[in-house]
Image (cartoon, rainbow, N blue to C red; front, side, top):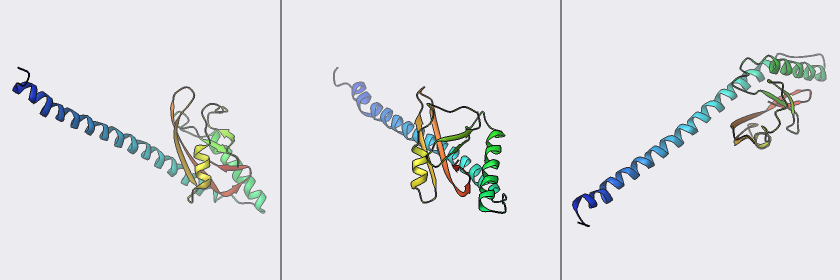
Length: 156
């Protein structure tokens, strides 16, 4: 009974149905993951937009005083960042080195400069990267180069 109807049904219809279902599930999981990361990126960009909008308020008699006031305001925002358990908020200098973090740690082993490099090269001055840390944790980093002079702070 090598060529019975059951054997032909299994190798034909059932196998094809299983392959189509596996392909559909793979496409669904990939699109869900992309949508999730896109939503997180948009949320971060909204926060950055709010922060850069607030920086317009800070002024001084000279450009240096304005930059100093903006730098101080950014450091205060990082220290008082309300969602420390969800996001790590960092201030970066012109080389991509960390100046301040919301958790107060140096964030060694967590950072790559991929998002900073992408932001420096992008026309809209925004870059992002998804990578794994040394401990295997998946991280999404979004970087925005500041449109204003803020002392030594170049990016969020």
